[in-house]
Image 1 (cartoon, rainbow, N blue to C red):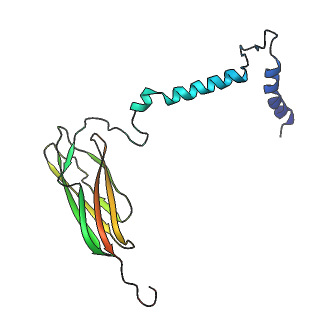
Image 2 (image 1 turned 135 degrees about the horizontal axis):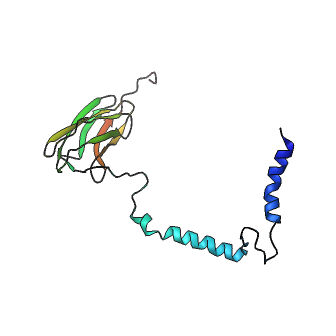
Length: 181
C-alpha cells in the first residue's frame, strides 16, 4: 500500500477548504458558503419546484411506455370471461376474439398472465386493419380455491399500449381424504 499517496489524497480536500482568500469568505474558486437560512430556503425552493413540475404531471408513468411507429386500435368481442364453477385441478381454456379497428397493422409485442396459472397464446404475426385475431387463455386451477380472477396484459402498438382482458372462475376445493392429503 502506498501510504504517502493515500495521505496526500486524504489531505487534498482539507487543503482546498483551507486555501480560501480573505475576500469575505469567498474561496479561490468563487465559492461563498451559505448560511443555514439560505441553505434551508434553497432546499425548500427545490422541493417546491419538484412538486410543481407541469411536464412531470403530463408525462406517462415510468412503467408505461408509448409505442414507437404507427399506432392502431383493437376491439375485443368481450373483455372478460367467467368459467363458472369448476373443480380444483381443472384446466380450462377460452378464446378471446378481437378486431384491428385501426388503420395500421396491429403488432402484439407481448402477452402476459397475472400468474403462472394463466397462460395466454397471442398471434406472432401482424394483424391487418379490419382483420380478426384470437388470444387463447388457459387457466389451470391446481392449488386454487374459491373465487379466482386473473388478468392477461397485452402490449401492442395501440394507445394506450396495454390492454387487459380478464378471466374468472369459482373453484370448488378438492376434497381432503382422511389421511390429510
